[in-house]
Image (cartoon, rainbow, N blue to C red):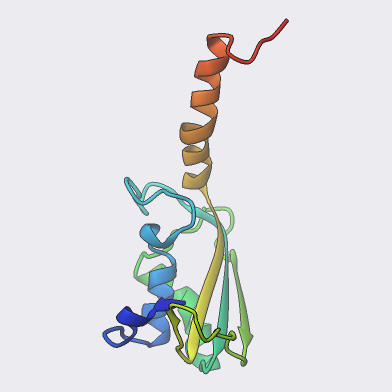
Amino acid sequence: FIQKKKLETMNGDIKSLTSLTVEGENFFVDIADDYDQDMYNWMALSLQFRGNVNVKQVNEIPEWLKKERKVLMIDWQPNGYKISINDKAPVIMDDDDMGYYDKHVSMIGNHADIAYKMDQKMARPYDLMYSQRAFVHW
């Protein structure tokens, strides 16, 4: 979904919407601070297109992502894309602050940088506390 204030100035073609989904600042996991798409590769990527989308344009998206180097797949899984198309756009609630657009793209992916960030943000602080015996109660 796109915020209403950004809706007027946004280019709404399929490629620009897909490009937004694979940028680090739009991920739910906070990896945007030092995200380098050339450093880590994708293991799998699922793109869900909804609404008024052209099937021919959607089928060109994986090759375009590879050509523009927006997504780098791991060597042993060069075809790690799953694409689904649904002709019905999501329902927007009346009091929602997200704007309605006739095309939507969602992405679910497995990225090597996510494991690194999880280790950095969760495991290391736990290890530090454990090394000081913060969780050891005898």
